[in-house]
Image (cartoon, rainbow, N blue to C red):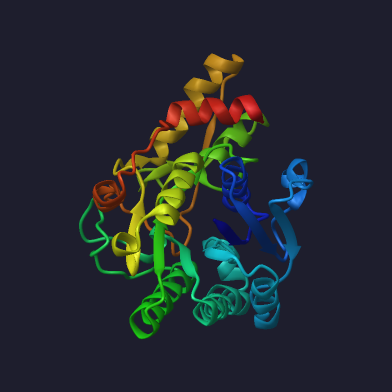
Length: 316
């Protein structure tokens, strides 16, 4: 299979590329390098099955040119976005243009060439849920702009599937952590680990009782592979949660990092509390139901949080 990865210089995108190459797939990556960096993939640059391109999904002509030059592309994994609540709040125009208009461009290109699209969404589309674990049928009511743009992308996907019979799949990720090709340090677990390694206090917003569904990056890669390989009748038009189904509070994560860091490095770690961040869900038992992707695609997370924290300390 030849796969086009948008945002392939990013944290999860580059990790997916590594895995696809190791399984003998051909990969084309396009990234505007506004946040990602191809330096983490440089050891693969001589691989004839890999093309690393610089380009922007807001440019439809560039996307069309990429597909014309790589006519055997059978699937697009669409990561490219302005990610996260804070970045979208600071740049609402960029968030709308990249996350919504850019997704439209990807879908139009896919429609013209009949290419499968795997869209990377987020648990942020749910907002503050009414019931947990959250199934894919739960109502969507995002509380911040990032969640709104991801939900808009999902709606576009649904429209292209129903109107044009395009093979589309949306994946709603939990809170991603872990070391892939490299680590992304801004989500809770990596951030706490980096703060501990820098001998800084762990920064907790609010009372710390808010929970997340933490999922390791290599389990995320497993889910994407299952969707890429999944038969059309199993995945086309579907939305899947990708999580563990286990809610874990920020305070619990802080305690785990503190304990593991002392065991591994023999140093004490402190915590500090800051005011809650506006627009951030504060549900005590927030977690995603993984039942659908487990039943349909036999997805089974392999990583536990303790192992993931130790991995981050080891590779930092």
